[in-house]
Length: 178
Image (cartoon, rainbow, N blue to C red):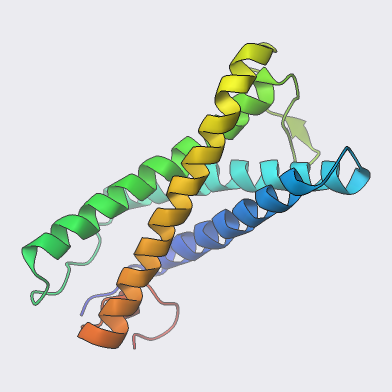
């Protein structure tokens, strides 16, 4: 069984950790009452994670255009191949849509995005409270859909590892294949 390149593996796991962290932080910070220094810090971290996901996802797409992923096992039924490809495409769309929706929501709410406190990202739209009210639930539901699809992705990987034992999971694990 062929493996993904080390670059693809590192990008996959970095993006995965950042998405899980940003998602968790988003749930925690939005449940915090009022405005506090801690809540503001969490909002900054959440934004930084989102921008970093966007940057790493761009690198990953560029890498993937030049480096084809390894073939799926021949033993995998055609419907599972189609489902795997469809799920991966949806995840790629969401990996871009979630941080972009958060970025535009933040701008529409009238707040800048200052990456790691070092530089402000471009303000592409002016403050627009009505647009912010539209983008807020869009950002939330894109996150919820992504969480569900990530859960499905993990379940499929575990199914291939524990039930099918076809080596699919080992293609993306750091280190040696299982």
